[in-house]
Every structure is written in C-alpha cells, then in structure tokens.
Length: 341
Image (tube, rainbow, N blue to C red; front, side):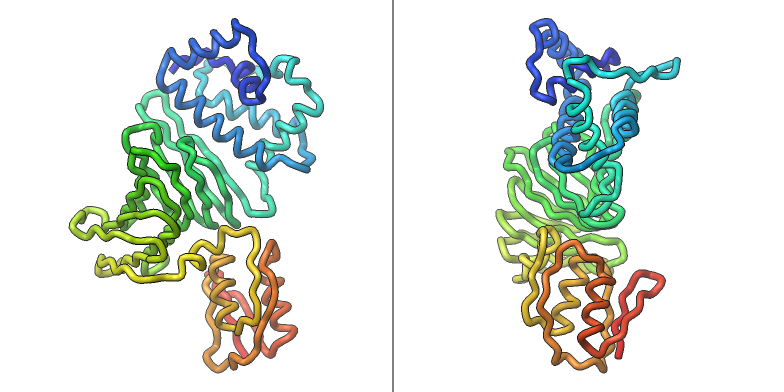
C-alpha cells in the first residue's frame, strides 16, 4: 500500500468540495498506485456516509472527536516517529464545517438512542486482506456495506468481512442481522457458526445467537438457499414468507411458512401493539429488546395492552404493565425477565 496518503484531498472529496486539476491528479495517482488504496478509499467513504447520516442536531466535543478521527485515518501509515496531528487545509472552513464533521464522527463512538455502534478496522500491511468488523453492544445499528448492501445489526451481534470487492461477497455473522442485499451478479454469502446462506439480491433476516438452540433464516423478499456448513447436500431453498430452521443438535434444516414481518420487526423505528394479551406482548418485547422472557403459567391471560414500542427501556415498559395489572417481575443474573403473580 502507498503510505503517502493524501488525507486532505480525500476529506475534501468526501465533502463534495471541488478539487483542482493537480489535486485530482494526485488522488487518481494514489488510487491507481495500489489496489489496496482503492479498497481503503471505499471503506472510508462508507464510514463517512454512515457518520454523516447520523450527524444531525448533535453538539459534539469538537477537539476530542477531531483527534479521534485523525487517529483513525493514520492507522495505516507506518511511522517511526510520533504522528503530528495537523488540521486539514483551510478550505474546509473550520468552525461550522469542523463542528459538523466532528458531530458525525462522535456518533460512531458514543452511546446513542439506538444503541452503541462500534466500527473497527483490523488492517495489516503484511496480509492480502483487510478485515472489517461491525459490532453492537446494546441496541441496534444500521450501516451500508461497500457494495451498497444495507444491514441492520441487532444487539450483542457482530458482522465481519474481508473483501466485498472480490468475485464472491462473503460476510460472517454472530448474532442477528437483517440484510437488504444490493443486486449483483456476484453471489452474497452469510456464514454463521452453523450455516451458510447464499443470495444474489434480496431481503432476509438471520438469527444465529450461539445461546439459541436453533438458527433461523426468514426470507422477506427474493430468494435464498441455506445449508449446514460442510454439508452441501443439506441445501434448502426458501421462498418469500418462508423460514428455514436449523436444529443445532442434529444439524437438520426444515423450511416452513413463517411470520417474516415479525422476524424483521426489530428493525422498525417503532411498533404499535393493540389489544395484545400478556403472552403476545412478551413475544414482541422479547424480540424488540432481544431478551428471554419467562411467564409464570399461573398468570391469567385476560388482560389486554395497547402501547407503542419506540425508545423506552424494557424496565419502563414492564413497570407500566405491572402498575395496571396484577403482575410482578424481576431480572435474573443472565438477563432473563421473569414475570410472576
């Protein structure tokens, strides 16, 4: 990789600022010098677009997040001496411009209304591939992959990929994600610890938490196939509205009609529940908050609830329910919600 990185020109390019002929030439020469330069440029553009989309109406600590971003863009530069942080060229109009840039950057580094979104790049100049990792600690996050595919990542989940510009696009998932895959003649493959899902252009949900007894693929649109890793003979095809269930113990897959709207419900901005009984409500709460809920069998199911799930905490919701119904609740050490008489 060419380590003479023209960061001031790259940032200006991302901002839509007109470049001089000399700057255009310098950028094109850098991109053409090494295929890894083009890959890095695409990854940074994806990061830039994501943080710009999250930057509205936020007042950041400008100096702090500017230094964070400077540290990020210098990660690939080999330095024997400490890096001297320098401001980008004056044409970026520091002040409002820098404030907006820092605001966008900060939103990838702090806890926001939809949860904590963590983006990390594990790059090595001694390897042919660049590993990118998206992780969520709490909440859920949406991002755009370099090939244009959209991904919602649920809480306590991780998505990794090495090279989406290769002949075959492949990502590895731990946890749950909803994919809206950009149509491309190259196949797109999602691998978990147990299954592989192959698509070309479609929308589907994959739930593959290691603590669950089953991995579930829910097809919303298009077509996909899934098979047990290491066993191509187990390949099964899904149609829209169907779900594929992998039993992790006996490594078998069954396909049946499913509630795919419910499977992707957690990606919505809000969900309105109308006249739902306790068991129905808890089904939605469990999916929305990604938590296991156990209801005492002795509890009656004659109470109905109507409310909207948005950005409230689970404890806020269950506290309100307990105030209007004869129920008690508590959380166990493994974050299971117990609802009792």
